Length: 240
Image 1 (cartoon, rainbow, N blue to C red):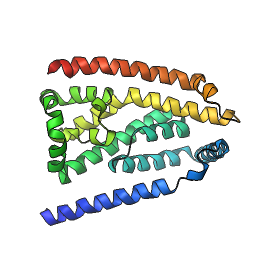
Image 2: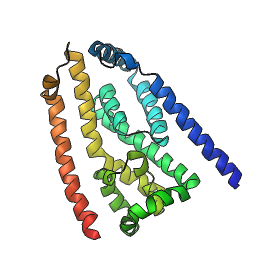
Image 3: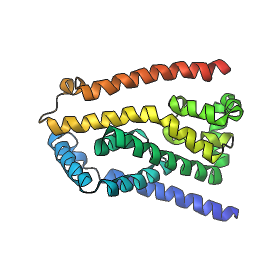
Image 4: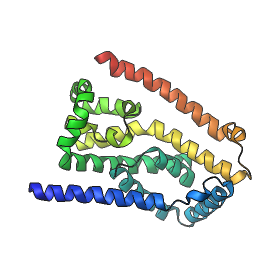
């Protein structure tokens, strides 16, 4: 493929990304974000919409999530949304699958169009870890996913393997299994948030925090962070 065609496709990808993000954020009614009744109305509408055809809506979510992640979207909002829409179990399953696919597509696009740029930006920062990934790419990338990507923004996390030329099957599988613990926690929070909005007439921060569906997954998240720090030290810091 010629350099001019690669440049054209790369610019087209960036234009689509900007247009997609503009559409998403202009669809939000900013003026109603401080009105709790707006969230109750939204929750009711979403619940009715999803219940009409769960299979179709899972497909819609899958397509949206794949595009969102492939366009460098944040991961956490999707996890909360999937928990709200589908509950903790189905939400976890669909988000793990769709985000893993989207991340793989982003990795493939980045590796083809932006390999030199990614290496220029990230090579120096992650140079000390590259030999670990090359030593056992599946094992260490699974740990990398499990511990949250060493604090790197999600979009950039998905591009790190460009630095060491990771195989696509290993990329997908290590992402899939590494995502599960954290994704389950965020989906549980989303499901708890949906339940709280449905059952409560007026928002109260203290009552919200003390709701078991909220504080239990938050405690789980705190435990996961502690485990992640220990694993980071053991598998990454202590190796350098």
